[in-house]
Length: 202
Image 1 (tube, one colour):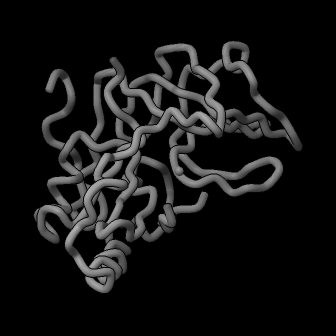
Image 2 (image 1 turned 135 degrees about the vertical axis):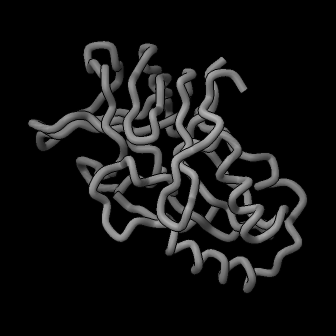
């Protein structure tokens, strides 16, 4: 889809107000189970992490993401290992507190050719009306919403963005609707599509 990564390292009980990150960007969390597709990766001597953004295509792969609690490779089938790193692609289910992910259900292996991730129907639907130049300008402005450093993933909401089909498509770890509303207020409705890597488990 041509989305440029911003970070290269992919109702109910949900919180109604999200803490603010860089530039006032909401950082939503949830006390309900969420699910999504991710690469889970663990280096020897380090805690495992769950990567929702882009993955560097190396062997072993490299990525960045929140720490994952409750992970057990004994229950994670089809994992791979090389150079002291173990990883796999899974449908994961758990609780996201805005900075870390706690697994609540056994992970399910996911094939690269049969993705589990959801895509907003607008991405391949009717094109947006904003010009490419306008959207590229907004994308440049998004730099202010990334932290200057990455001390921990409690400060990270955005995964990346790109101009596609007349929209600025913005990938985030989780959106309860507050991130989409934030950008609608910034640049107008129908300008951005906020895609959440996690959604409510059913």
